[in-house]
Length: 275
Image (cartoon, rainbow, N blue to C red; front, side, top):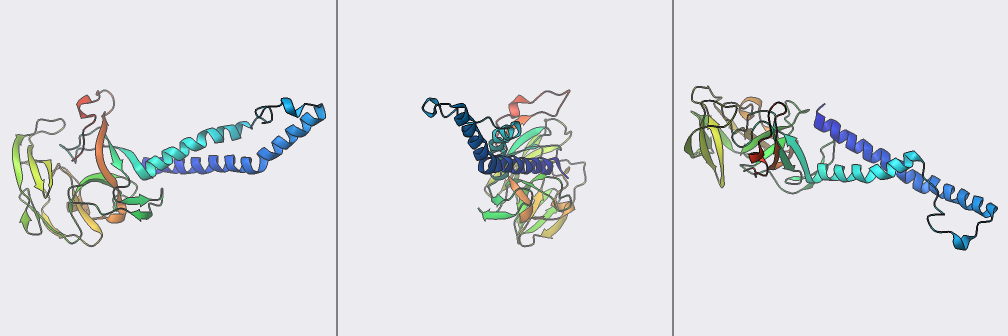
């Protein structure tokens, strides 16, 4: 069970439990407490004209007070995380140079549709993933995890990867060499700009590292994904296709980079858009 799933479960349970406690108290127990308070004051001879609204409201039990306070917090976080935007951490270098180890990214949860928390059942469809999108998904081969890759092949596409070159439906995807990569965690890699339709993005290739080659035809409702670090990425070349129902959302923004102690955050990464 992934940490993301556990956190979602905590949010759902927290929202349900606090909401039920607050609602049951409001409908069943709060009126009885007010009635007892009014009866007690009448017996004491308190004058109704001098009583304020605050005076007439009895103190809530501690559990109800906590539930009323935490319910809107749980609810707002649940709605934002489930339907609007969710943060993810990049643990590996498979998307270098686009994403570095330690990047924290934001994922648009309504890019392709709205899904129920935990069950991931889609109840509103906003469209399909597009070629070139950087997507977070739950891989069928490890459904308790979330991975991030770039969509290369759409349903029905014929993909060929040979000699560090990508072909889609018989067309060679052109790239522009930029020289040797000088960023962190990777040595002896060439960086290029790949022109994937209307999408331009950087990729890495390693001349001395063997790469998985082959040809694939993408089935209906599934996608072919690859990492931008082409020679250091477990992706559809190795693991298979990603079904549309496994998509979590489209990554669009880097809001932090920190790989933990003893390293320091890379401040230059903060605020970068993902393309």
